[in-house]
Length: 257
Ligand SMILES: Cc1cc2nc3c(=O)[nH]c(=O)nc-3n(C[C@H](O)[C@H](O)[C@H](O)COP(=O)(O)OP(=O)(O)OC[C@H]3O[C@@H](n4cnc5c(N)ncnc54)[C@H](O)[C@@H]3O)c2cc1C
Image (cartoon, rainbow, N blue to C red; front, side):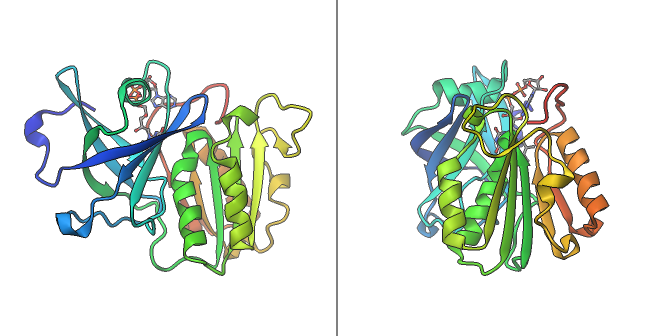
């Protein structure tokens, strides 16, 4: 989205990048210092929410939303995790030009796709591709808060090389103690792959008993969300317990991750 500088509100503030972490061949995480309370900047957020970044790209102001992938319990840092989109203006700017030490303008936290203080007893987290980012924030948050709930996390990616934060997710599940992790790959797999193959289906959800007790949070492309919603409702999820996040209006034709 392009906007004139007059539409940038006074609520705009700066984040300074402290670290950049390569997650996969086309995904990087940008870790920023969290504004301290002394700066009078209110940077409270719920796991799953996003912020609006404002960039001056060759004299044109651009805004772009990114979900916070960090847990709100992290006192020092906030992070975003960005997938490089071929020909994408902002994602390529971040991947190719944005450096540690650089600051960036941000406007307030937003979004209803989030966990608030009433954390559900049974949570189903489902993501595809870069849609993992708000889900990762939720998972990190529930583990940090030592929630005694039951979590099932299902992630769909194209190939093993596309799996984001896999080792950390395994550790988080161990720390939590009642968190099942399920992966499925929609394109080629190696002989070492022990997870599911293909698009999300009923069989992958076999271990979920009494799905009507779950709150589900789904993030991924439109067709993925549509298929997932139909599947969950067919299995007995209450429509009001289905929550999802959209990253935009683009669509995928060949693959759902
Ligand atoms: C609430 C919200 C949260 C978001 N959180 C994240 C996040 O955590 N991580 C993240 O990587 N992105 C996230 N996005 C998407 C992000 O805002 C940008 O849309 C994305 O980075 C592409 O921007 P761009 O300027 O690089 O591409 P553009 O220059 O805007 O688009 C280039 C081309 O790619 C297509 N396109 C745009 N986005 C995608 C996509 N994701 N997949 C395939 N094709 C696409 C466009 O239709 C266009 O044809 C989020 C979006 C929203 C609305």
